[in-house]
Length: 88
Image 1 (tube, one colour):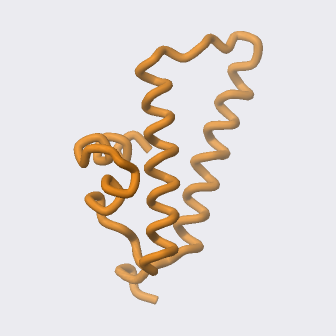
Image 2 (cartoon, rainbow, N blue to C red):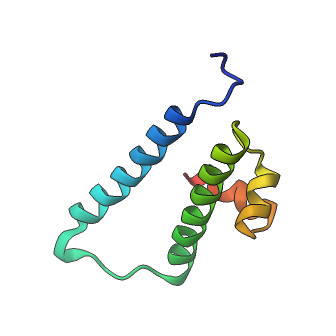
Image 3 (tube, rainbow, N blue to C red):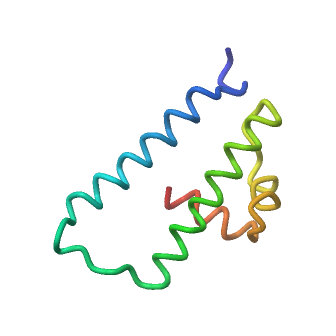
């Protein structure tokens, strides 16, 4: 399989790694955990939207979706999808 071809297992592995890192960060915060501010909370929501849309589109299309396709599926502006993908 070439680099340009769809690799569902690779995408799924990356998603699991991101989720595991987020859970580990929350566990480490423990009792000192403070509520997130509104901007951080919105970013987390947008990350989840982008991840879900990307996963669904990759399955449906059989390839890695473009940022524009993800933006449309997640109902987010393209600039926000680009920002979220940089953070991830």
